[in-house]
Length: 489
Ligand code: ADP
Image 1 (tube, rainbow, N blue to C red):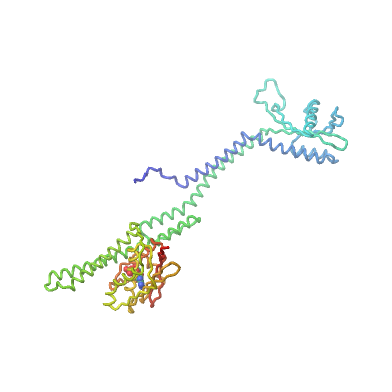
Image 2: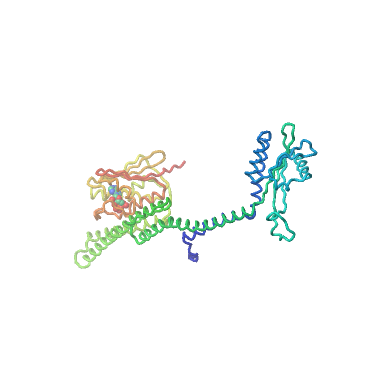
């Protein structure tokens, strides 16, 4: 399917961060503006309610204090709150005991009927009541007939009336507080808000520049190094640092670079090996055929056998290559059947009989009983053949190969042991890799494509079988694998 490549190119990190920061600042500023314009009155009222209640409580606690007048003066001065205290013991006439108002403010004294209402309402509510009152005041204090409407100020007051008992005396405390923020307060808040707006905008730009630089720089470095890797420079090292994610990315890329380097080296080795392996039998076949064509009397069985042997070697190599690519691409499904593993091993060993007779190899098979397994017979034969032929090829001077079948807990373990020179420990983990050959000197005496064990590994992996190798340099190697025994019950 064709990829749709119409996606718009993404924005740079710096642009994105700037957008996010500005968005974040806009939300904060929006909330602040909203607080000031829409909710300021409400917030002010809540704060004032708490304040007036606390003052009333404080007065209640200290009403019998001989210093009460000084306390009331203090509260008035600190909070700009009007306080009046009346003696209401007589009920009929309220006697004004205390006022925080100054001489010139006495005109704003409460009217007697208003005081009576306060008293009745507070009594009804159990001794305390809060009133919210609103009235129009005038800038500068005096109202003139032609004064424009805009000069009038709507003022909101909160009045807290509390009735207290001081010995035999009943007292009524009236606290009054303006709850409309003054024009100067509003102007100050507005000014502060403008400064905050400018500061936040500047901060957003600076922060997005600094952060994008900090974040983008290591990524840019990594990208530059990755470009070198893409141009097949496997010696690159990803070293940019700054934060954990980029360091983890770099260590993954370093690992990938090493792996790619190894794979590329193996590929080159394979091309060298395979081309050598392909060319040698082809040259020999051609040579023998030409000799047989051109020289009378050379058309003999010996030469024909040489041609047949070389063709076999060639066809083995080609089929190994085909097998491994099919196995790895999943094009070779596993076809499981029940078969006798013991018979299978004997059959394969018998293929090597002529070898043992001609070249003095000793191949033996140790088995206690016939074992059946449920597996892909052809593929398991391939595994056994590859392991046994490796054992033969690498068995060294002693030419001894032992195949052993062991049973334990419903599992059959097949071991192929040779008496060869063994494999060095550091090379052990690589022998299952494709095209890996422990001995880099490509010796034709030892037949092999470097694919045998990777085919074994693929097949055993597809069966979910355990497998492995023990090897001791100078003593030999034991390759093993395990399969579950097929039990009819
Ligand atoms: P090859 O075709 O070269 O034998 P394999 O994949 O079968 O390829 O084996 C990979 C390498 O593992 C061999 O080149 C050899 O170095 C090593 N090897 C495999 N089997 C043995 C063994 N029985 N003894 C020693 N070395 C072995």
